[in-house]
Length: 263
Image (cartoon, rainbow, N blue to C red; front, top):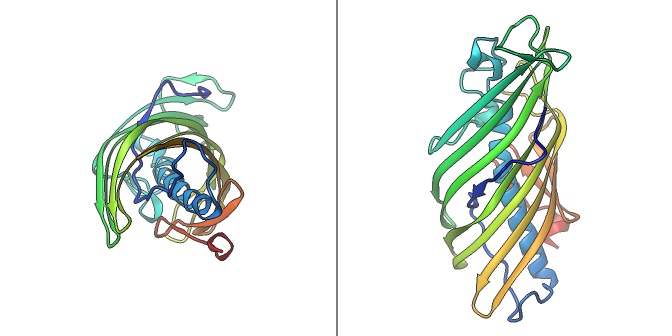
């Protein structure tokens, strides 16, 4: 039902990130403090992508095509809507309960829908810490199942990919440029039906492999990080970067640094 990889994608990181301090020699090992800073930056990057992923998964789904809606128009529970500064393009395919293609949505026997999402545009933000600006080009190939009959939850699976692009950040740590790219896998994420102000994704994971490039005087290098977000039916979910665990607050859409990560 899904393509294993999308053909292409382009994303400039839509978070307030700061580049980790680096050695003067290309690809020198990072010290403990630099590794900790890099992991935190990558956690923020992965969490921001997850905000868009959840917006896609909490999209009203069949309601846009004449079927019943599992939530208010516009989708996103808890403010997980699509960024108004971005254009959203989506195409869909409908399937019955044995995986056969259908010509459209039919309330009595449509069991799953495959979505292709494209998000693109420009983002910028100013906070008490500084500002960032970037362009966004994100693609996701995702499918939702469990639509037939009386629904209590919907199951999402899918894949995504972003190619690296430069981002400019300015904050209390100075002005920096960096590049990040990633591949992602969404596995068995359960979204409750109906969605309410007290509901969160029930379970499932988003795995991301993140590649980070820096451009600094006398130093260039690439680091790779594995990121896993695990949903647990609460607003506070663990996000693990190369073994270091942080907390992703789904209500504020921010990363909370755990005591063990900060030490």
